[in-house]
Image (cartoon, rainbow, N blue to C red; front, top):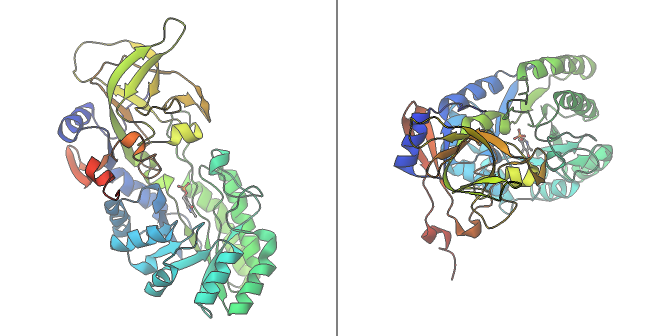
Length: 417
Ligand SMILES: *Cc1c(COP(=O)(O)O)cnc(C)c1O
């Protein structure tokens, strides 16, 4: 059975009683540690690390990473604006987006960097800002991800400009007198380190054919172990393996390439937990299942339903004392939706995989570990009209600060006429 990572059982019960559930709790210390590891990524020359803010875009989180020296990767114009509103200097923000921001002009004029992800994006940017510098996202022809849904490279991904279309990039660049000084790849979340390294090699090969490129971003995608049988990517090891590529590149092309990486998951996945209350326990007879029902679900964390992603689940009894046995349970969310479960079969959201947990009682807390990345930000917010839950930052043992309050029903319906 899994164990609590940064909270104690006493803290879990304290939070339930003082702040109510469901609620996210993020640990500042864990985030700081991860930020240091990312900032120490081996690099040959100069280096920038960005936080891929779509993983966890709450203001205070962005401010923390900014304070620690990270820049921002924004996935939309709105994210860029949100980061600016949080106090991030525009020059520390780069947009890599599927959709051209409606406020692109305004953002670029403030100093936000732009990474064109298609030929069309490059054209639009060129029309707006001729004779400037720009970066382009290249699909290096291969991808990797923990599932097909998180794989964003290779022939079946629409992300970036296909690597064989470089000549088209330069046609557009020539038309608008753009200087392509940046090149970017991001092949997927939860990538296999070997594939990632191979992709870095391909990226540098492509950059060799791009005479003005000074800056290469290798994206994010570093694997994080949430479950005990998973393995976290070793950034030092990966970084050291790609170092020689950069020295070779310098020898061959006479350019000292500035390296960028932009992790999301790596920085926050294991810095966050979701606390839910166990609200009901039912079963479907001797040949059926035992179910734990919680006051949360896909409204806070859609990863299990969407990817068949597994998170450690821990039952914290509401009262200490009487010893309890263990049972296998299906953990079921509070939405009227059979797909709303936290116990799918790994990688297969269609199938159930009962999980051995401490005997659960109504009133206990269920702690969902590894819930810092793509949970709060990616959930089926407001489905079944459940309000968005709040978020706490843990700054020290038993020290919690609101960083986002619980949403009210009034706030949920405020735009309705
Ligand atoms: C989502 C994303 C990232 C971060 O990916 P992780 O798997 O969370 O590290 C980095 N770069 C781009 C362009 C992204 O879209």
